[in-house]
Image (cartoon, rainbow, N blue to C red; front, side, top):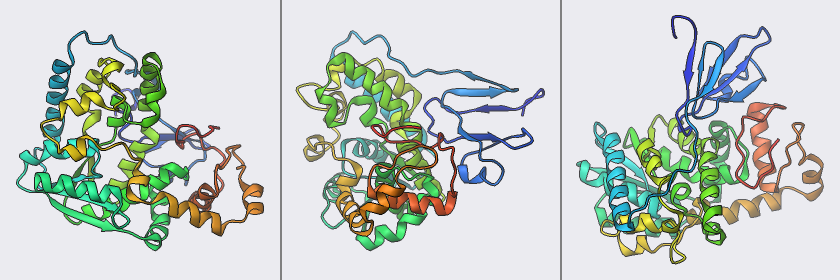
Amino acid sequence: MLNDGLFLERDQLGVSPLYYGHTENEALCFASEVKALIEFTNDIHEFPPGHRYISNKTESYYKLEKKKPLDVDPDNIASELYKRLEISVSGFVVGHDPIGVWLSGGLDSSTMTSFARPLVRKLHTFSAGFPDAPDLVHARIMAEHIESDHHETIVNLDDLLSALPDVIYHLESFDALLVRSSIANFLVSQDAARHVAAVLSGEGGDELFAGYTYLKSLDLAELDNELIDITGRLHNTALQRVDRSASAHGTVAHVGFLDPKVVDYALQIPAKYKISKNVEEWILRKAMTEKLPKQILNRKKAKFWFGSGIETCLHQYAEAQIDNDEFERFRKLPSGLILHTKEEFMYYRIFRKYFKDINNLSWMGRTKGAPKQ
């Protein structure tokens, strides 16, 4: 509180959630979760990242935008990127010992792992998936490489279905891709909470350094614009997954790639060094060449739900459980939003049990490619 009113501020990229609304008496209410507000109002909105509220006025203090590209050789860029990532991780790890990492065995989470390991006596790493899923295999490689105390959560379809109500309750979303990717994260976080109070996560690396396969088809100008766009969407999709998965189990998650100094530098790195020689995240791989095993450096990007083996079984289960007539009859919501698949319809039915028929869903993030309200 200020002397002359209320002060609210959300971080630059929306790592931490914030929602607000007005009651029938025009009283302002705000919270870090939607479920805390629905008792008082249906007029709920997401407070935008990089904004602050001061005495009845909202203003922007940060805008995610392209910067002038660096005119230096890639060796120097890789070296500076390495230093900034190292500082980002060390700044969080100090004071948290033991600490954990959600480790998928991909480039981004392995990068966080490699920086954290020298700073603590014991580093816990956590992975989840179906037996012999690619994430589990590669996470073992990385865990052995840095000699972490490694924990695996092996799941089956019954485990996923059992976890779904809790996942959707905490996630506050029925977006199919977001829910699907959150289940493994949720179960990993549940396991992590038994051992540590804080974890590192690799979110943001794909968006800042071009880790997605589809980005290879874009020219350099399009790539720059696309990276700005998908980084700007993190706040109510992937970052929401990270925040809710951790907080549901009383832990704190740090996204080392989204430290402001790392983000600022990433925005200056020329697109030609992010995808080079048809290799995604080329400059990050170059920066981490001496720190990571070759199997990790050369691993191709896999979506979280593919890497853990979750995608196919949930889709097939929903297809078998929901008939076509029911899906077509109810797929258009009162808000006007259209459910994409039977899998998403399955998630929406659970969502309704907690959030009823909220017509205003503007606060809910949708994975890119999904229509908005």
